[in-house]
Length: 584
Image (cartoon, rainbow, N blue to C red; front, side, top):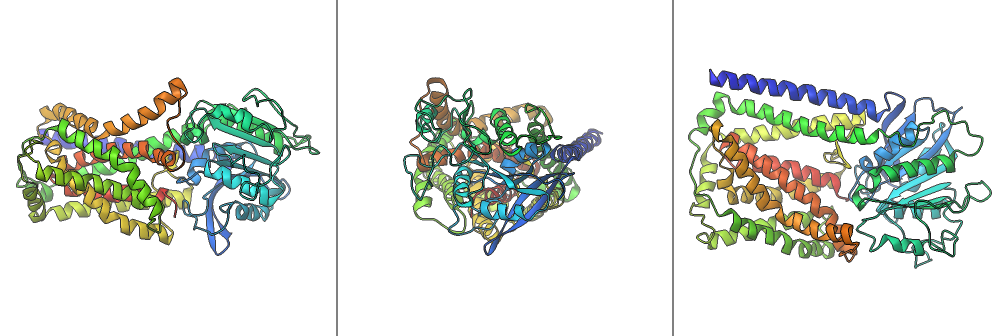
């Protein structure tokens, strides 16, 4: 009877997750199309001997008789079109043809050589061929690396009517071929927006003097309140500096920056006499709701598949074998093991990133470095524990654990189930992306399609490295993953899991706190710039991945009494994410 009640509860949870996921997808589609008023399509753009991809947002009544201004939105390093799709959505709602572009080598765009615009020029040439796009009214929005590409595009193209640079500027101390010739009239109608706590700017207040020449003023530039130059066709030298209270990675979705960008493009591209039938108040933004709904729906879909796995694992085919697959271990000293693990996380991070920079492993930037970092942490940890097991109070044999997992035949079924779940997730994401122009995530699309050859190669190369990492991770925290099957002990299991999470994420919170707290409270920037600053962009995200991976391992061990299914699931999932995000 209790088992029957438990099954009923499982099916109820499964039904709730199914309804929640379905309603979430419908909501995302409606929000992403402005309730049917904006057509969103996934497009391919020729670019030299390769192609680019992007999301095109077009008001449904745009036509050759009603051509509309065009804006290209370019993302930053290790991002994709999804990062700028919120900006493109808001522009599309307001009567623009807006393209959220996968820059060359990012997303599903193929890499290109010797193109400082990273494909933006090719994108503009493509948009010029569309009858409903006004080729004489073009704007560019670029974030971080995309801001550099936007600057280069303005220089090469020569007919860009408005440029918005977010969280990125060329070296204003160099007025040559690398940065392009700039003055108070070039680029036309320039808006510069940056986060107050942007890690790439030592002191954003220095911009008030750095921008004096390009803003055509002899006094420090006044941010947010002041306006320089004019939008008049005979001048087109409008200038404005916006500083918002945000960090670098959040700048593309910062409401103030998005609102200022919209208003800038409306004023610069919709000239006097233009009848704006698409008027929507600047503060009326729907992309935040779309993005939050997207993240919640993604979590719901993953939980849905894990619930299905839980039901399958309670069938006789698995239960009969699980009962013989139990072994008791003495609990390790979590304080000691967590201290060693966290110290390795901090000490090895930047040296390994430097190794990956100076000795690149094609075809993917940074991914081999991250994989090597993870692998070195747990490999060194494994050796330390093996040599000094008595210090860590770990008296069980790791060799015995490996032997036990190898000889139990049902693990093969568990691995098959895991592979089936990941394949199903990939199929869903593929359908959503290619047929409904929907990518699930928040700021970044976590699960993009691996459609170009370098990403497939990277997936094959990285998968064994991460599999080794997660297997060692499972062995190391094996006793902490051995959760009780007694329902009355579930609370104790959660507390145990919480202690494990603290032991594994403390180095990430320590490093991020040491960097951001002095900047936010005292205005002191401890980052020297360059590679270290760029690496920190990955650091706090990797901390979130560690949390997610630990929770997933705990879930699978509760189901299977084996570290193998969780290790395979985590490996497939995180290699998919990594090869989706990083450039090739």
